[in-house]
Length: 452
Ligand code: AMP
Image 1 (tube, rainbow, N blue to C red):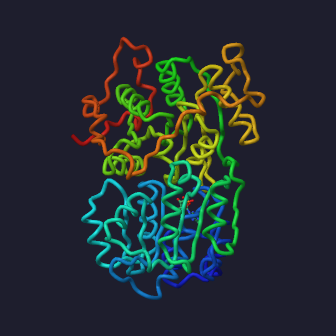
Image 2 (spheres, rainbow, N blue to C red; image 1 turned 30 degrees about the vertical axis):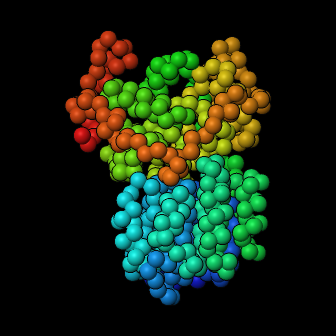
Image 3 (cartoon, rainbow, N blue to C red; image 1 turned 120 degrees about the horizontal axis):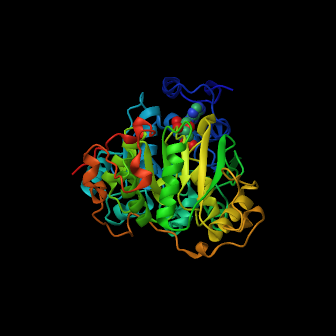
């Protein structure tokens, strides 16, 4: 099957050819003809499956007919996070290179006035986070009655983040007759209810079982001491001894741990950036861009900040903390092993509590994750071989980084700035693990440019 059989326009096919894609991914192959036939689509697919192009390419084709009117967007795409919204905007720029379409982004952390100017000019594609969209609507700056096509992306993530009431409201503000494309990785009952309420006779397209992990990723467990400094020590050892490490995302469960670990890695001379929900929008974008371009090798991130980010070739994932929720594990390791590339995901396990959380993950993914080296004995209690009850950590409330609800805090990259980051990395002899940096790959020791 080639792209030319899907019914896409010449302009879109030319842009696809420029990107170098040879064949459509399964979600593209299955969804695109239905989108072009103006059917509602329920797409069950994770990030990494090519689902963005599955809606962007046919949307571009559809949008070739008709034109935008002031304050009345023709199509609306809802994304749970600012980064995902920005990523979809990039996809429109890439695939829509041969189109003259007005694309606007309504996300928190960006001036209302600039966004307003764009809306006034007329918008073909509006990409928004739910909170910011409703803010504009409530100010009377936006009419949703011209929306012909609505995309709800990462719906299960919207649910996690408490956006479902906003989504329901927005669905009632757009015309009943619009076409709806709905994407989710999982189908919990609340999501099923929304699809039953707001999709009209949808075509269901499912490309992978929601909880399957990527086959090309090598998954491993690494034993560590319980204290935070033990875990940091373990992480440094793992990074330094990693084979074929090109770049890595390191996941922490809490925002404040992202900041601490980031500072620690900087101190130890690593080329690193941080990404979490308290950083302001420009700082998050800048951190991500540095990582994407390979200017820094490591990115320390929280789940919410990193969810769905498209960073094409991450070689390694490190779970500094075992995630509270097993499905976050699946999302985290989905950052590597993409598009057929191989990847490695290593989870640091510190004590019985972590081992129980690993057991819950293993139950979800239906496979046992091997230990690096000898499995720990009594220290960890080895309960991971069988399914264990969920750990108390599950009761932690998830962060809600709604750009509308969350207080804006002045937390740009500079907040983590460490004066040492401006100098060449230094090593203190008093700490044994820092003493000898000669075996570190050079790219991990590059100084990090941090804005003052
Ligand atoms: P997504 O699931 O939308 O986040 O896309 C995952 C990655 O796959 C992105 O880096 C896309 O650029 C890439 N991609 C999308 N469609 C194709 C395709 N047909 N062939 C190869 N790569 C693709």
